[in-house]
Image (cartoon, rainbow, N blue to C red; front, side, top):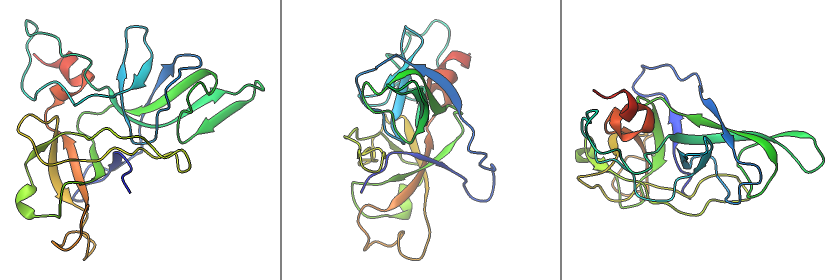
Length: 198
C-alpha cells in the first residue's frame, strides 16, 4: 500500500532530526491532507494539498526565468489545530474542514531524502540516478497516510531515485512495488530552492 513520501536518512550521512516547519492551514480548509502528501504554498500564505505533477522541470532558474506554476513547498508530516470543542489537537493528517487555528508540519529542506513506494515495477540497480515524478492518489483516512507513490521514471521529473531500501528482499527483482529512496532532482524543484536560485 502506498504511503506518500517519508523523510529518512540515507547511506549513513545526513542525520535525520525529523525537522519540519509550521505553515498555516486555512480555517476549515475543505481538502484532506495526508501524512506523506506534497503541499504547496498559496497566495493567502497557507498550505494546500498538491494535486498535479511536480514542477518545475529540474534545472537552474535565474531571476529572469518564468516563475514555476505552484512549485511544491515540501512534504506534509502532520498538523495541529483547534477542534469544534475548542480543544487543541494534533494529528497524523488534516481532515477536511477539521478545525481552526491549524498549522501543518512540512519538511521543506531541498536536500532531504525520502522513502517512497515505487509503483511501476520491480527494483533494478540501473534506476539509480533516474528522474521521476509522483503519482497523486487518495490517502487512507484510517491510517492518515498518503496514497501517493512513485511511477515509472521520466526525463522531466522533480525527483531523482537515489537508492532502494535494502533488507534482503525489498531490492530483489521478484518484489513488486519496492520501497525506494528519492530526493528532489534539483533544489529548484521546490519553492525554497527556486527562491534561492541564481
